[in-house]
Length: 593
Picture 1 (cartoon, rainbow, N blue to C red):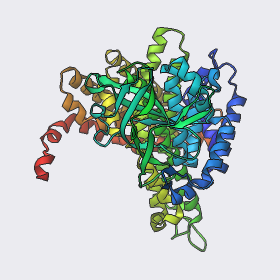
Picture 2: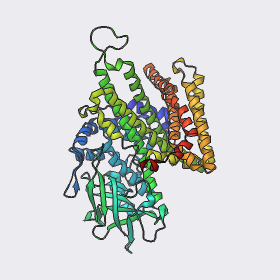
Picture 3: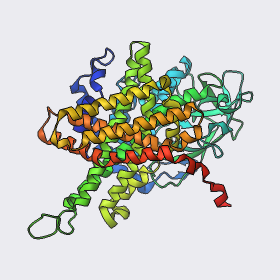
């Protein structure tokens, strides 16, 4: 069973990641601590009592396709309607369209709990939220009036249609076509694959966001447009009309998230699906990136949510399972395996990685919120750049940690972890997709190194590193013996990050792009580990007014992470600085021939 860690979530939001800053702004001045607690408590209750019990049911039943229609797992339709009746779908959407206008930080926290309940369930509403944001920022008033309110309420759901058989992450290769009808509408034709919730029975209409090319579009990504293509056309009075020329051709049989229908979609069997332009012609990528940036943080939160669920699952098993005699145990009988040092080591690793993922995802959401409430251009630029810097780290490190934590959970279960009936394997199977979709973690690393490090001519990342060092100095100045070598390890990790950053900036400015890309993935992990250690330490520093047990727990987590996992930074730095020549000399094609 899953129990939402509401107290830890609330502490991380407020004292580690800056929710207090937002509560002081005019836009969120009415967001008091009591309201925050009420929202988190109810979101946690819904996740634990309504979503979580159906997770294994969905894993077993999947989403069968029959007679051209997809059926979701037993109980999911009722679950979804209970979810939208609670108002959760519009948590951060504009009040003008029926949303609650709450910060992204609260949306992130709720999303964590829903993903812990069931990652396969939570991803569907997540894409709807992305469609809402794209429409709020880019759609015409006419389209907003017709579609937005029902998306915000959850009466309809949205999708994101990018990938095609010949075009995975390379959008230059997209072939889906759009032709002007002359009346403001477009005819859309082509095939899209890996479309999450492309078809289902949760809502009576599905609003597809589809990337396609016009006949006279420029080559490459500069010639991509974004179109709104509903499953059913909508009449002027808001009622549903004829079925659009779009169908689901298949549902993928996947390693995990079996409750999420991953569809192959066909547009234009009968002359072309009717679509409406979002934004401007040939400017669709900018509109889609509004959805993708939202989705990338959301996928990072998926890694976090699965990690928390896997940790709780493993902890419960470790306390109940008895095997052998732990050092120092006396009396008759075997010890709970939770007392054995190696199990303690793994549980600590699981918990600290989970808390790092939580803090980094919430810090990213905080930056997005601060950019939205900024009162001047300088502040808006700063927080936009901070959100840009943290997004690839939040997506990649949190999903990597999700897999690592779920794998440790299987290991703690021993042989029973490899047996499906215990449920530990499902967490690992579900988590494994998250480092792949919404831009692989390798793509996140490229984004970080080539696009985010150069922000403000490299000054933003340097300021970020200075902020990390200030926390390390604060740990050292606290002179608390229970921190052990935390300050020393933080300073060493931050120094490794600083040296690696200088190398990356120099390689990019000198045109040695291949050298930079060879080290991009270890660089992202290095940056994430340094940030994670700092955020754990900040949590321990801010816990001094809490119960002694909470202070001790947070200090122990920070110390363990910094004295063990953060030690990776030296090896990651060496990988970045020294591996380029060997990597570029490796000829995989020659070996394969």
